[in-house]
Amino acid sequence: MEIKQQLKLSQQLVMTPQLQQAIRLLQLSRLELIDEIRKELDANPVLADDDIDPRGKRDAAEREAPAAQEERVDRMEDRMRTASGDQQKTDEKNVREIDWEQFLENRTLQQPLQASRGGFEELPPIEQSLSKATSLSEHLRWQLQMSDFTESERRFAELVLGNLDDNGFLDLKGIEREGGEKTPDITIEELAAESGLDPEDAPDVLRIMQEWDPIGVCSRDLGECLRVQAEAFGFDDLELSVIEKHMHNLEKHNYQAIAKDLKVPVEEVYEAVKEIQKLESRPARNFTEQDEKSIAITPDVYVIREADKWIVTDNDRGVQRLYINESLTKQLLKDPNAKEFIGEKLRNAQWLIRAIEQRRKTIIRVTECIVEKQREFFEKGVSFLKPLVLRDVAETVGMHESTISRVTTNKYVHTPQGLFELKFFFNPPIRRVSEEDIGSRSVKDAIDKIIAGEDKSNPLSDQAIVEMLQKDNGIQIARRTVAKYREQLGILSSSKRKKLF
Image 1 (cartoon, rainbow, N blue to C red):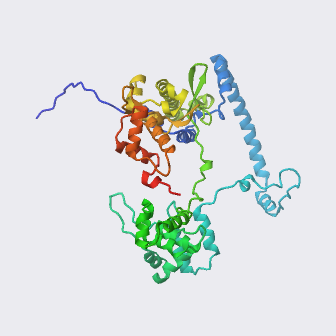
Image 2 (cartoon, rainbow, N blue to C red):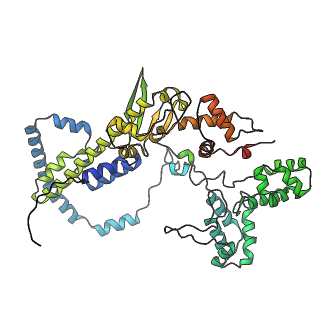
Image 3 (tube, helix red, strand yellow):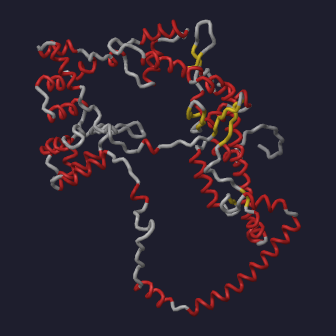
């Protein structure tokens, strides 16, 4: 063993802080970027936006001669120091003369001013005039307050309401933890024991809650939900028997098996099913935790057509334009103790401004490439969407696929065809007979149109859809692929789409 010096040449990938910040900003959505800019404005004193350092004033200052600008800044500083010294002496004299205890006492005894009756002052504030959709939990808790439950029954009801899912059903299934371990399912008797209620009284309290508005809420499954509604609306024994014993046959439209088991004519089963279909299968349908009408997406870029050209412009509305607060920075740099601190903040501000500008240019560049490759979509619609993968755009713009993925995530573009996420334009190719490949999104659109035009009393099977796609569109696709696309579109199978009435 010995100690010696040795030269070695090697290459190493180093993630600098600037590169890390640029990558992080690139994958942020528009709202996340605005929030990030606000945080940086609060944390960095040398940063300014249009409210602090308007662009017009900044441009005018840049047009001045450097010497004149320095002289003007020095004169302003002298006047500020003189004015601040005189003001400080005046303020100290006034502070000594004010009796603060008497001032606070007078403020306490002072009567509030009466509001005038004219103008808009007598109107309620705008917050009281805004309407908001009532959620299911709020609607049920209002009914709980109006009920005559005892304290233990009220605690049990609160536990039940806390375990409702989005459809209004009581979900007592266990949850899966991070380690893969699943907790056991619970029962209403265990909820009753936790709330101090006699377990024998739990079914009765739950049944009372199931009869609240909307009827069938707090049910443990679809069968119980339909049964509660059928009993409340006075359905006959045949309809109740179908709900209690033949939910699986009802789902498959196997009415012959129901008629054979219940020993009734199939026509009577048809009439019973017609009445059952009038019941609500999702109690929370008219209630929502989030008002869908208030959800708005602001696009990051716009695609506008002018003559025969497509122009891509960024949407900078709501995003602050950042600048360096030069006047404040010059004043702070004169303090020797603040030079190191201000120097670091200046570097951080420059990195942030450069990263935001690079993000904007990258999004526009990627969008222009997408517009060039999907030109027929912008002119004719979804049916003309071509197959496109990240590699195609990455090779064209000279970037890595991971960068393209970050750019297109949570970024939206406004087009003449509608508002789309940038990832919408990427879809794998599907082979066609004697023609160029077609995008998977166009295939989904073709499947949707075929099913929309089918005979509802005799819906098409997945294999029939495969044959129609090959015959009419020249698309070669497997039956399981049709089934996968149909499920992604939220379309039921042919047996469940069949309507007999």
